[in-house]
Amino acid sequence: MTVAGTAPMGHSETQKEGEMRVAAAQTHPAWGDKEAGTKRVLEWIGRAADERVQLVAFGEAFLSGYPFWVSRTDGARFDAADQKEAYAFYLEAAVELGGPELAQISEAVRDLGVFTYLGLTERGAGPARGTVYCTLVAIDPARGVVSAHRKLTPTYEERLVWGAGDGHGLRTHDVGPSRVGGLNCWENWVPQARHAMYAQGEDLHVAVWPGSTGLTRDATRFVALEGRCFVLSAGALLSPGDVSDEFPLRGPALDRAPEVMYDGGSGVAGPDGAWVAEPVSGEERLVVADLDMSRVREERQSFDPTGHYARPDVFEVRVHRRRLDAVTFDEDEGRSSGGP
Image (cartoon, rainbow, N blue to C red; front, side, top):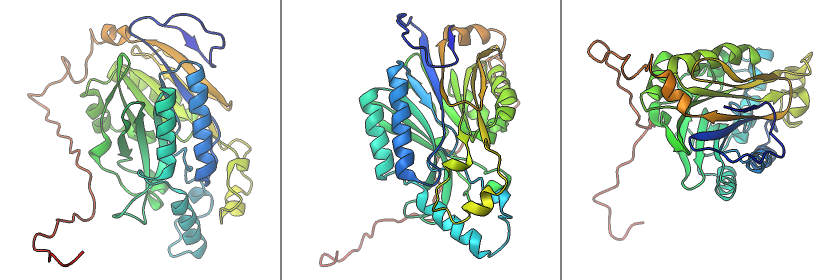
């Protein structure tokens, strides 16, 4: 198992069977600007492709940005005009799953051949047109968007701007020699959510974060040990200069803000809980690791949480994976032949 804290320039070694190269794109978002943010995503997918990465992951809500302002501007004030204006901006900056931004990114993923996990702010289409979800999309080079997981429960002040998700996106995907799944931020602490991913034969778990070495240093190794799988944690960087000048609460939200608001923390842990690539703090880079998937099988000799160490005679787990919308429209059976 070889490791590269940065992209290994000039790497010429032939990849062995069962090996997989993964990366976290630890970079700054174009906060609140979905057009510029899309260009940034395309740039870093291209960088990953140049280094022959098979799977790349971006931080939580990377496109179009984590709602950092809520905790810095008394965001819980009810019916506050400035908070309404800030939310309207944030809603407009969110992307729809069928929108042009994801179409462009999916095209690049197809052309470059890099499976991509992208954290984004999703605006509902039809139902929930006025709601923003924290969504982690998985984009396959051959099939496009293969899952869109809406964060099950936004954490603390996030609940003021993000809607609650459902189990529709709790899915794994085959990528090279690995079966891969992913969760958003504190979902990685939720036992049932992790259990649902492990039960699908997960070899590589992608954990995306807004950008916190303090969180990833503990959680990455814990999930790896529990799941006996590799864990790729992807976090972003955020500085005041990343925030759109058009954001209504930019001034108050950035008042006395530190130069580094979110410090990344991207890293990779192995199925024995040891670091493959230790968390990188405060530095923009492609955090790359070459993984030997046979290590997963080795570590499951002693512990397989949803296999020989499970007790289905004692515990019963059921996961509901239907997309939950506020309304379902049935087709009109008695429609007049003269009407539209």
